[in-house]
Length: 238
Ligand code: ADP
Ligand code: MG
Image 1 (spheres, protein in one colour):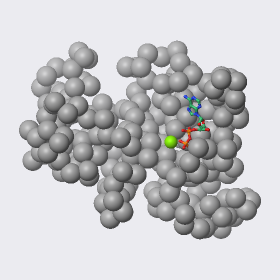
Image 2 (cartoon, rainbow, N blue to C red; image 1 turned 120 degrees about the horizontal axis):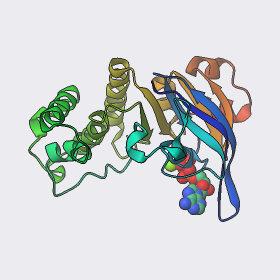
Image 3 (cartoon, rainbow, N blue to C red; image 1 turned 90 degrees about the vertical axis):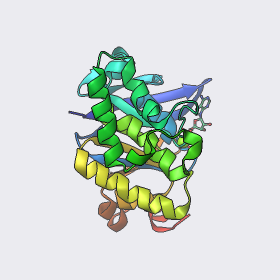
Image 4 (cartoon, helix red, strand yellow; image 1 turned 135 degrees about the vertical axis):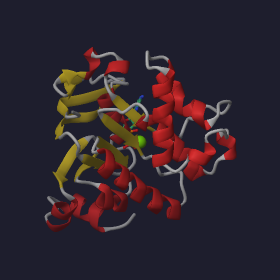
């Protein structure tokens, strides 16, 4: 499973509210994209879903369980950030297996998961390299691989491709879509890029200044934008 529900989420920093009451349900297996301009609250919302931060009011539930009441290891969520945060002193294989080594998982199972993820992401040849010996696209594949080996209930991706050049971004986007089709795992993908949102999403959540403006399929948003902001944001490349 991997159903994610947000109930009346607000978040204030030093008395200033930046998330103003978000309700949302992401169904098991869906690929939902949060899109909106810089500063609208996408990362804050994703961190709340990940349980890395607590809402000021409201509740996040994963398969009906309040995330703040579940330990990080049991939440079943894997987050991928825009800065890949690979360990520079470790090989690719060590980077991929590190997160599983503190669990009770047998070494053979860890190795099998790493090999499978590496095969899927076509980084099998790179397992003995270190991050500095990789291109940007290869590093990002390793970062995604680290999430895959955990076999999470859901992937949470925060602008994972924004450090890559335009061409690579397009091909990695296609790879992520293929990966989602193949794994069928719930994904929440955050981006400020409406083209990315339109091409990837089952459903798009348009955010503006800490509020949900509209939730719909890409086609639905395109054909029936609820207001001028959505029409302008979806229609015009920035
Ligand atoms: P986005 O990811 O859409 O660019 P963020 O979620 O990073 O937006 O930020 C939303 C708003 O919350 C911004 O105004 C930002 O300055 C504010 N904010 C985010 N995190 C903090 C924090 N830890 N302390 C204070 N303000 C924050
Ligand atoms: Mg952000």
